[in-house]
Length: 515
Image: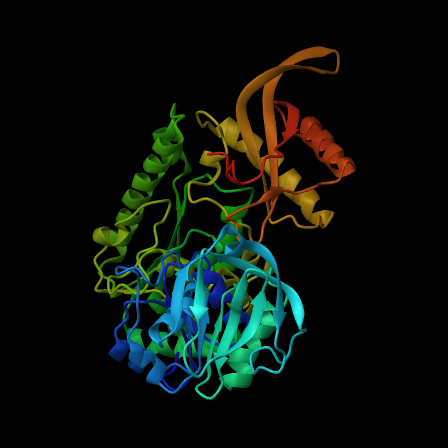
């Protein structure tokens, strides 16, 4: 970001929705960052926000140890929006009163019918009654002097209140969640109509800004990137390539645990980019190390340690580099400490400490402030093929944790083919709400009949989930006819599988992956 570009500051008080607030603001077309509530007032001033949003949180503002902010935040002269705990904190800080809920009736959780004063500046673009998403045990009993109530529900007389003269606004509900019917409109009103944001944040603009910043930092230096073939590292490689060209070296460690043809696809894509591409074919090495290992965490550890060893060997051949490039994205930053001065190093194959093995002087994280959907859009702007930028989440250990039990080349080949058939059929049929889908080779073998003979082969599990955030998920309702076609193809085209099952478990209690 350039110093003169508009930015919104989101102060986080421990909300489970902090990333969601930021995503909604970005979707409106405005750049924002999530920072911890402990940010000093000087740091807030230096950030120079056009507006401040105070997030929700699990605390009670009247507790001595609850998170607070410097009152001078309300003297910056910019609009402030408090959400849930942020609303209570605004009331408490400016002279209002917050108390525990008087009764269970005033504790609201989930879908809540809420009425709005549409003459208010904040609610002027919505209907007078709609559904919001509440999650609070405390209530504002008295709003500060100069404020007016602008929304209420059955259990919350101050579901919204404002001081329009000072441009301070507070809502007890969560406008950032999809369950709040007019949430996006409320946020847009606050940011565009009240804060006067231009809403011109886009990946087109970000691309050139990022390229210019990388060039200014790297100059004639050399950069090294561990390319996994996933979305994040691939977009980082494409961006760095456009910025510094052949001063970038990408090392692609092919561990033989990728999906069908993916290793060749990665090499083909980046052969056309101006960079140094090194492919290390280490399939036999990884298979040897994994031989006889069944326990999932042990698999992860072996793959991680071996990756470091192979990457280190290749890095030594290159010699000293000035910068190590990491595909860290914004959720990694937020979840790893929210603005800590320490560099946030994205683990590769669940490995920490990779930089200790490489001789470099600084880390570059060109995607550090982007969400996943923004990374994908940046990839499109950089000319990466759609099948790569829209690629589903894929675990670092790859197919090793989609094979239950020990790993062999034969099992990998079987799973690759079955997985490819499943994914191809789902994509060709354009199945609705299929967020992630893959096959799992179980270690269960069962009796079957193929032709005139008895078989004793593997059971293959299919997993397809629908989700918006991967925090929760439900199984996708694939039409029976399509499931039948997939099962028929797999059993007939892939050796050593005689039974196909479909996983219909939600998350929770299950996870998306099996291991």
